[in-house]
Image (cartoon, rainbow, N blue to C red; front, side):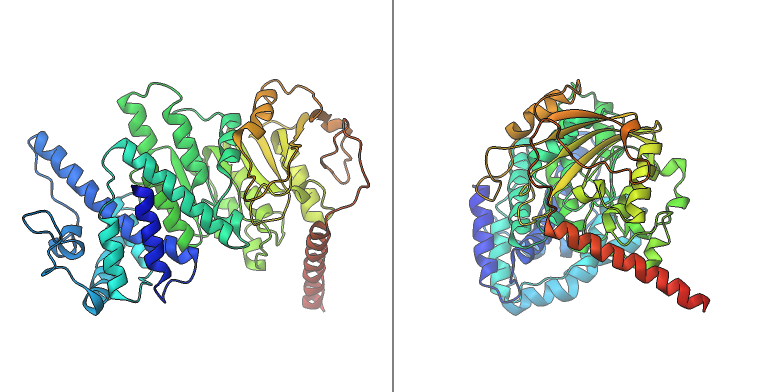
Length: 484
């Protein structure tokens, strides 16, 4: 039933001139879903308070409650068409009263951890794009048919929402920005093995896939006590996200998975000088797929000891710094990180090997990220002990990956099993760091069990390195000009 409602909502939005892409569909569905969720949450709290003989005061003024402005109903439980706003009256109310009202929640909230703050943040970062009031009325009526009460309903909702995020990612060239394949995330979580009581962090949270899968993993890792459940809700999952739409989607995704008030901050992680990170700011576990291919400005690069324009390499420095001693990480990154010859890449590899135990590298095939042709690896490391040996696993599949043939958990089962013992196989081998070139620190994936074909690099890898070297040269020339 829920799936049909989502489909019908998309059909309505497709007809509206204000919504032109899958990104718009997800954004507009999200804010309406969020208000419906808040209404159901308020009802739950009110019932719980009544059962314990207490009084609950709602956080939303009567005029802006779902049952008043969105779906006023008569005694028969049906929509009261005499009270329900339609057409321009509805869009005027939403644009000029509803959004400004919820936007103020951010200012009035006690702190950023509250649901009130999340409401304010979300409505500060988006706007209603549905231009035709009759379309908006139709979408609201459809979403009113959704329920968030039972665990089964939340599970179905999370599954459907994930599907929308995946479709959004597939719709453009920036697929990896919004959607990391869930079989890959699940496998990364299994290898890192978080435990109840760990703090788990993603500084490029996106749609919060890593945090959601870590939550699902921990929920079933043991029989949870009341204290365990409370820890998972409030003191386990943390994230930062720069982009408004991704921030909203991440919040919603965590809520649908069962994390009621996610600790996600809307900020640019890279704007923080990593020398300011203190022990109290650190986390036990990092799980992430930072954006790659971006070019950061020189003022952002000043926040890092190793200067580079490559966004992912700055994020990697941030993650190493923000991990606690003994902390564990599973990080997706471009495979060119292992072999680039520019000074920043060489210095960063040395920094990683000196300060962390890079114990595992998973080499992924092209096509793993739908809509993004770049090849990637996953780095697994623990902070605090220098690397002695690196175990590599090259995922070789007997098919090409694509939209009709995506990565699945069975594809990664052998890797997950073998990494426990770091055993050698046709697809896995171990490299002693003592054998690594101390000038280049080249960590390229070179399977000794596989007959190498012509050692040709991907054209995009070459272009990326040329761009990076050009940028580095420009920086040197700029400094020389300043001295002259």
